Length: 307
Image (cartoon, rainbow, N blue to C red; front, top):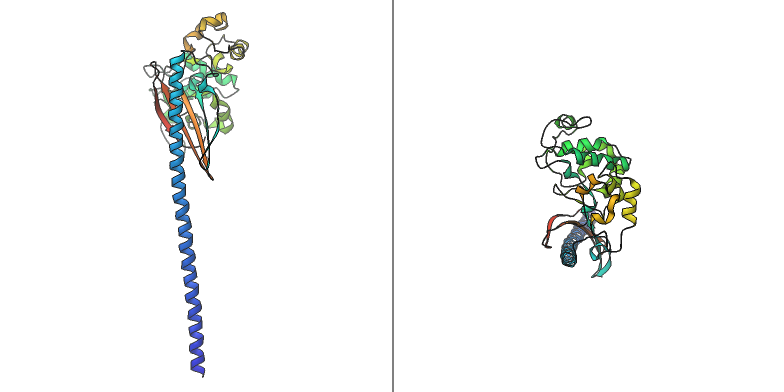
């Protein structure tokens, strides 16, 4: 009887092991199937978010094109300036807004057509930083980052020597910036808090853009001239007519003579921000839109990361 009992014991243990192994395999396969389903659903959601965002981009382009046909003045009370309230879509919602980038200081204006530092724009950026109570050394650093030469601006500039000493080392770009966030690479002392304060006042566009007095904040306006007081800049911002300032002459002596060359009442550059929520997934897209003098709108750049 003992050999038979031993055989039964071995058979029982074998059966238990087989069941345990089968359970482990089944659990692993079920988990893999669950992950595959989640990945597939994530890809589908991303595709849905992209399609909805591209649809919103096409809508924004049409709104800007229609606006150009109606008038040549841009102000925030026009249809493009209205916040897009959340709209229901299948399984979620979509929302967004269009911002006028001509109402901000263009970092690439810090250099002239020859690639050298533009002293007028450099002083304007210093004044903007002072108005925001930020470190003015960023102005010289940013101009050196963009200009073509290898000589640091006096007194606070920086070229390769500064950046090669960092970890990891890198060289100065010596070319136009494509994102305002490059200021953190150039001047990390600014910090996240300083950048959050500066971000609404700056942009990165092709060199030579003008500032729209209808969409610029007072700090941006007063930066255009040393004699531009905050009181005048705030009056221009707060007392704007319902249909916007139609031309610079309408403001008379409120605008200093040396600031007029940097100002305008129309805009060519806009940014569309779109957020799509589907289920538990969120898709974000930012589109840089250019409207040419003829009114047609082109998408210049898209980014897909949350800011």
